[in-house]
Image (cartoon, rainbow, N blue to C red; front, side, top):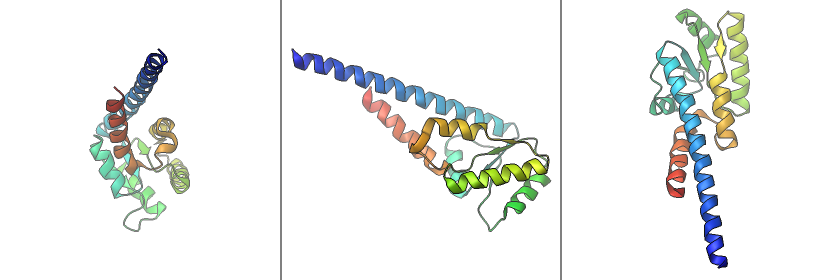
Length: 155
């Protein structure tokens, strides 16, 4: 009799976890879809490096993406490059570690001085859902794969 109850409780926990993970996956995918749409409509996405670009491409973001930390560019170079492009929206999507947060803050201030609006909503929303599990954009694709396999394993 006790084994029966444990099995039912175990199934409830599995179902609960599976539902929570599925909801989390759906919310992250929705954010990524909105990011892809904004990028396709001309918003410029700024990430730290080439691996971040590769990850976003893998996740369906096809618009223009600029790296802030490759090719020996300074922050002023990045701001000047974007100012020349005359974009109406810049999406900051740098890593969520200490250096990424500093870089995000400095770029945001630099863009504000140039009158370029910077969108940090995607950055905030993504890291709200992935929390401490993912600190950088390049880890997002593998995180999504792991999340999907956990959901499949709990079903």
